[in-house]
Length: 79
Image (tube, rainbow, N blue to C red):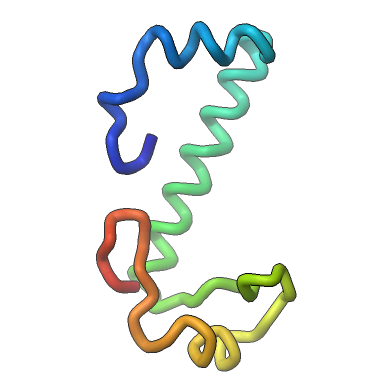
């Protein structure tokens, strides 16, 4: 959705409708959009992920050690 929105077509939504109501699909889309937006915003702040790859909550210093000096965003740009 974030990197290739044109790939989301009617067939994609038809598949979702097998499992979710229209209301749930809209809520899911809003949640995805919000997450993409705030991750993009965090990228402008040099903000590192709050969780380690194994799911532990970590501080920014430990995150920099894990992810290095150039964490990649969804767009492939460094954050």
